[in-house]
Image 1 (cartoon, rainbow over the protein chains, first blue to last red):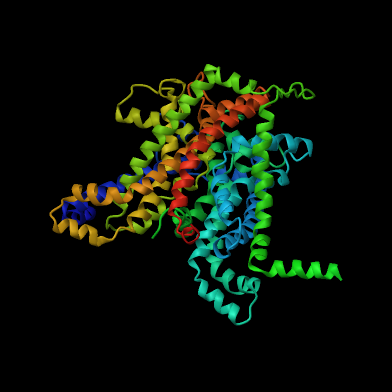
Image 2: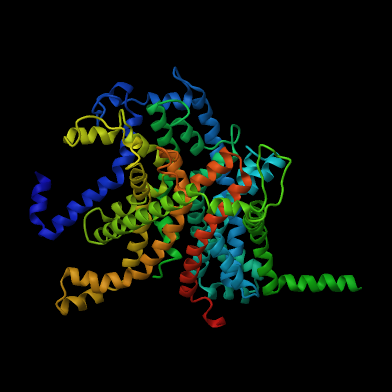
Length: 289
Length: 310
């Protein structure tokens, strides 16, 4: 009733806006909320026809089973912890490595004048779009020969192929927003170019570095194609494991949705908490404003 | 004597602007050549050879035969057709929905900041979780779609949606649209915020109604960003179609959702025809490259960076 009274006070076009907002809200969250509900349901409730949209007796036992093992501990569930660790190791090492060398390159591209700057800029733009499928076969062959299949190092190397170009690209935006004058002032005060970079530019670029890092982490965390082909047991990441939940091990819908929710927690939490930075990073290159 | 001179020369170069620039770029350049340029070229080399992993020792040069085989194969062309259908429909609809959502979220309402943040949710999910989630929703025995339609009275009994070859592709596309819409919203919202309010005021003074203002002020100013979105999203859709198809249908039922990336994957890693697979990968790269050229041109001419050098 309160809501209805609130709506009555509004001009009709505002009411329309609120109705549209509610539709958008449902469109955005409904599928994922259903996944979460599935993960806290009991089997009987979930598999009834039609399903219980709101579980009468919600339970966390699926989470307990997947994280700590339990009665219905299948092989895949025991792999879960392993995959979680692999995902953390690979996503964070790729992020840190690409952030370091990528920010060096983007600083150089935005701040320094040198021969070959323009071709390098075009190169970065172009290689961003190289599809994974066009480089997977050489990776597979080389890694087979060097025994890098199913290793962290193997995935780390391939992940740089898509992480580094966009790290350079996004970081260029952040460096462009830092006034050159500050750097010049530092250099007049006797700083070398590298000194100015370390003492003046880097602290100012820290928010940009953090945002780019989060962005890179999410993308690397979610990567599937390379991980599917280049790992089998030891270095398997979460997306590959989740894909197995929904196929290899029959129809365990509870474990599937629980695994899916758990695998989504890091990227979703990071994205929602740091959304402002991520949106800036996403749009920086395309929207001037 | 001369060696110290050389060292001094090198040292001087390294501390010059150009030297520092090269030094900073070198690591990235090495990585980009190592993990992108070199594999791309090596892939081309493989595509000119017969490389059937069942006979690992043999690697005869066969010229363009792999390409010929692909181009004369109706299965390949069917997969290309599906890829264009997938890309065209998913990009088209997600840009239109994205534009609609962005226009609504640009209005004044309570909880606007919250909604603008929430919109990023589908983007943050991995394509694997997204695919799995929608496969579960479409599930023929217990799926939410069946449950919902039954309760609404639109169907009499549960249907196995994904084994219907007529609609399987469209179901995959819906999953893709859901995940890809936020990017469009975010881009268009950012662009809307750069439109000065004075333009709307002026239009209002001239007696333009809401639709006129949208058509003659908003839309023309959004045109560049929408064009860019269509290009980028097309590249992503072609590239990422693999994940979603792998997760939801594995190309089935029959071959009705077999997009070209999935076909290349099957040819390479299931039938182990690496040479043929490399040729397929190259043909995909070629399609994407056409879009990339447009993208690079769009971005390049926006850059004020080069003006002083031109």
